Amino acid sequence: MRQQIDSLPLLRDLDQPFVWDIRMYTRPYRFEFYDTASPEHYTLLRPDFVILCYGIDDRRSLVNLQHVWFKKAVECYMRDRETIPIMVLGLKRDLRKEDQGVIYPQEGLKIAQSLRCDRYAECSARTGELMNEVIEDIARTAAKTTTEAGGRSQGGCAIM
Image (cartoon, rainbow, N blue to C red; front, side):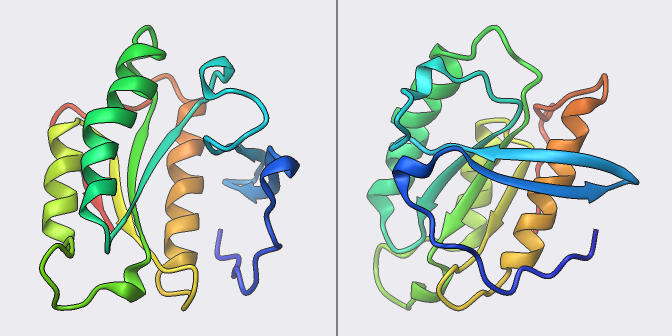
């Protein structure tokens, strides 16, 4: 799947789900992305893959990911779906500066591992840094949900 993502369409909350059709492993896949600002409440969704995001420049967002969103979205509403793959995604990579409070990759990865997530990645939508790699990793991980093994790491965590 070496499809380049040169420009993404403008995404508006009311247009959810955001739908992309791709072809990978000689099979077609349809990806439907929702975020918590979706017109549908996230507790009503039955996803095959969860991506928990935080801002690299905002320590509070990583704390919220760990203590609010992981507990709410995963442990509470999806507790009956232990094989669902989960990815932690650091956003705004272009804003990483040598400031106090900035989150470095090793810290984000450590949190992802402690939550038994399957993937950790970072990207910047503004500069495009690592966007193609993250989208490819999302597609490959999501495609694995169609296999019997499913997801949820037993302690390991892939990093990109």
